[in-house]
Amino acid sequence: MITIAQAKKLGYRAEIYHTTLRDSKGHSVRARVNGKIQLWKTRPTEFRLPMRHGLYDTFQLTQDNANQWSLKPKHIGK
Image (cartoon, rainbow, N blue to C red):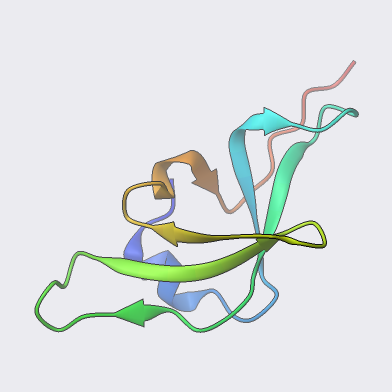
């Protein structure tokens, strides 16, 4: 799980890893930071961080889906 404090420290092109999705080799799916974090003074618990996965897939990391991502990969060995 990524907290708002950890999200603030992520710089451009920093990598995060999905906790459940795996690629064909058993490694965690990774995504990279693609922009600046957005914060609100009136809603201090909310944030939005633009992310990129692959060549064309983009999404927003928010407080709602941050529990699905981690800063360290989890490898499932064969």
